[in-house]
Amino acid sequence: MTTPVGTAAPSRRAFLALSGATAGLATLGMQAWARNTVEIDVDAITNTDHATDVLVVGGGMAGLFAAVKAHDAGAATMIVSKGRLGASGLTPFGKGFFVFDPATETGTIDDFVDTVSRSALGTNNPVYTRQLAEHSLDRAAELREWGFFDQTLANRPFMQPIEERDIPLLERVVVTHLIAEGGRIFGVAGFRLDAEETVTIRAKSVILCTGAGGFKPNGFPLGDLTHDGTVMAYRIGAKVTGKEWNDGHMTRANHPAATFDGWGDMFERVPSTNGVDVHHDLGVDLNYRAYHLGNPVAGGPGSAPDAEMAEVKGGPYVPEEFQGRVPPTGDGEGGAPGGPPPGFAPSANVGGASAGMAIHKSEGLVPFDDRCASNIVGLYAAGDALGSHMSGGIYTQIGSSLAGSAVQGAIAGEAAAEYAAQADTPVIPDARISEIVEEILAPLRREAGYGPAWVTQTLQGIMIPNFVLYIKKASMMNAALAYIEELRDHHAPMLRAANMHELRLAHETRNMILSAEMKLRASLMRTESRCSHYRLDYPEVDDVNWRAWINLFQGEDGSMQLEKQPFEALPT
Image (tube, rainbow, N blue to C red):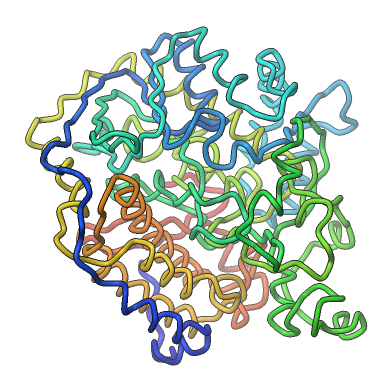
């Protein structure tokens, strides 16, 4: 079923005025449309073809273990990554690794799963929560053997098992298309960033370890993640989940785009392990206070006094068991949940640093079994590309994101290898490959069009405001949706690119537009407030109607469809 579009939405002009974007967009609009001065000979671009049994897309923690375990299970395996192995997406930022060690923990795995479920208000998938605890100790032991916990950079430790196994690795390749036929995955296609070359890879099985994504916000190391895997899978018929949840990271108000200045403590930290410490964090409680009072942190210029802050009523529900628990400074991936790293002044923080990203492991492809399989035969996902709801719609366990990526990568790798062992070699007609290559290169061939940077800035101006993305109500979300539909239908098909870098931006921008539509439609459909999803017009938790996840999929007519999946049920 689709979410209805309300009639009480303000006009686009009124919406932009409210968001403070009208003047900026008017100025940008003068430069938005221009002739395309192409810097390369598009007709000279060549295509390189590869083949493998199991293809891993992504070079982070999930991708590492997916490739290692698929290879060790006997499958010819290849990795393709937009970045560098061990330095892709959020991998350099991940320094905390959760380990459940029965020898040292006072509680059982059952106790851990139950505690996470209470914090997550039932939104977690206990199957994947349990897997995290059961396999984390083994994955940490392997990482220790490779030297991961001995240095700040992950590239060399990650390369050790890959080089030992002689697993082919293609780095700085942007994958833009998943190739499927008859509901079965056949491979991928994309292009190299550092060469005038497209790439096609035929594979019996594909594992998406492509991470999460955002809207390229200032302040968080998220610029390379744009929901590429999720959107590519959606376009070939995969079901997607968890798009209504939000990650509540903040950053510095001064120079928010200077990511290393704000988060360098994380990058320079040597990874470490930690045990059970369940919280209810990274929600939108500060966003709610900011909505009513402005600057949510007392002490900032123009901020409210402590007494006034304390008078703010309502807001996101936190289970009593987890109220008043103040986590250490830092971030969940560095050994502690919560806000910015040590050294952030209380008055220097602003929200929206991870705008467009949901809680780790809560969004991505819908798992159709306990082995990371999607509804597309032969297509798997792991880590932040899998909507496993391992922790649910709130950040519950310190270090669980990195550990969960390792655990799920290993499970997906073994499952994909088993499938590939009995699957026929895919045959992709040359005509189909030629068609896909032309779709990839279309922005380069466009004589004139919209610059991807301008479209991205427009998208950010619509989606990132606190009163749209975090503190939600139907009227504002419907207004934003009308504008996002305009970007989808009119601007995305007219994106231009002058070189391979801009070609990457054009494809990333298209993905962010579709992700924005998913977030708005899922947020409109969930008529309650729960965990990191908060609505002013439906402020209460509704266990009667909403003990369910929301799945999205593409209808036969190309429209975005939504459905409920009860927490206790398998997807259909």
